[in-house]
Length: 424
Image (tube, rainbow, N blue to C red; front, side, top):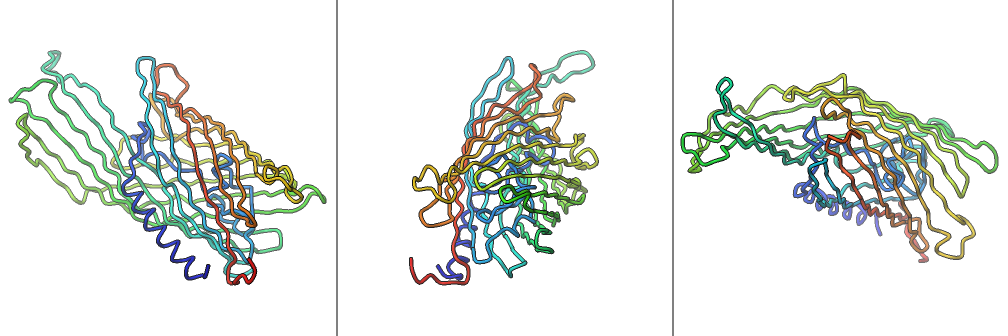
């Protein structure tokens, strides 16, 4: 495939990916808080190891978590990665239980060398997702007297997408530096609708729509050092850092009242409400040790959400932390004659504390990830299948918890860059 065909394929795939993001439905009651659920899984190799990425490097895969890891890319390779997922979740409290299923296209990315010491990756993926539909009943009172019951529905949809450009520079033979530039854009719409429980022409319903457009740039940095311990073992140490970053926003408020006869009156509209979203400072470090057969890695990541705010939401956030321990095993990486011995087997465990708190209890996410990479014939390309089982909640009996079962399909395709094959 020529360079032109590769780029055309990427552009076409990007177009369909953008279209699918625009049509995608997402459902999570926890996305009510802040800017929604943050996407932290990364690309194929990262998410098949539970989001591990700061201290690992591979010539076969791209890495969106630590841009410095791109320096491991083969100088002759062009890499195309695509990922989709489906998630079955069960929401429950002591008195409530509900199951749901959602599927999505998660990312699209390419990577290629510019020179022997400069490697580049371009990709598109979500930064955050919003999708919730909450209902409650509110007693309207006059002093101590109950007047009537109002049904309240709170809905949210949208999220923030990111189009990123990562570059990795090999400063020394064993040390690399990475820079990631992300263009963040999207829309978050929050709607609150009140309606009387019983038909009453003297009582009007009320709707407030708050729509925020986001569009701005964000920067982050990464570094890695890799070396051999001896002829058998090698290791990688990595770190990432991102500055606190205010985002450009434009918020519109629309208030409407409506009668039981469905006539609608616009009470108020403000298309230039003062608002701001600030992304917090973050940092992380990672370490991996391995041989040709086995790799074991650990990541720690912290995001300083307690230091920032969102002006149109009266909420306080907690610092988010993430711990990941993962491993990969290849039975016979060099001498395998059976296909099963060429497969890559992966296992990871993760523990995360979210920036979201419910009833002053910080939300936690505990999960286990099982993965396998299926190599394609005479190629570094792989089909990656991952099964993720976990639970989100505060681990308190009276708080909403989510048990989820997630299945990921990730395709990593490799081709020769700038060289035409004469023998296939």
